[in-house]
Length: 154
Image 1 (spheres, helix red, strand yellow):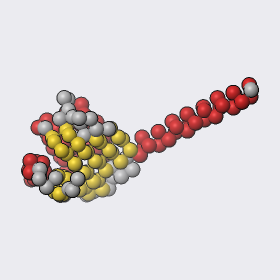
Image 2 (image 1 turned 45 degrees about the vertical axis):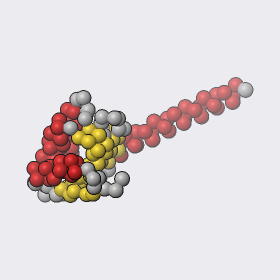
Image 3 (image 1 turned 60 degrees about the vertical axis):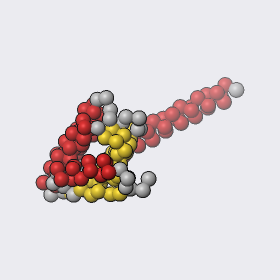
């Protein structure tokens, strides 16, 4: 009985170590924040440099939410780690303070282009959501980077 208990303890310890190794591997590949009612889902693919933001964006502190994304991209663009970056926005709603921070991110992407690398921004909107389409059009006209307006089906 004593040997079985020691085996069980070592087995579960090994399982926990494996879990931690896998979590670290995932964190090295992807940075993820789950959506809330007022913040979008955020997925940064660290293998490719791609970003997806999906949902509502009206956090009580937009700077706190977006500073992580902006700081990460600033560092990556300065080092030239990613030759091509794709950013996809699927906002259902975005407030003014979030929009201002998205503009900061888009300004950083202009540095990516200036360094001879590429990036593509896609602004996905529902066909009936003219407000989100208009915001996308305004952003597209504000920056000098490849910016696509994409009608989505969901």
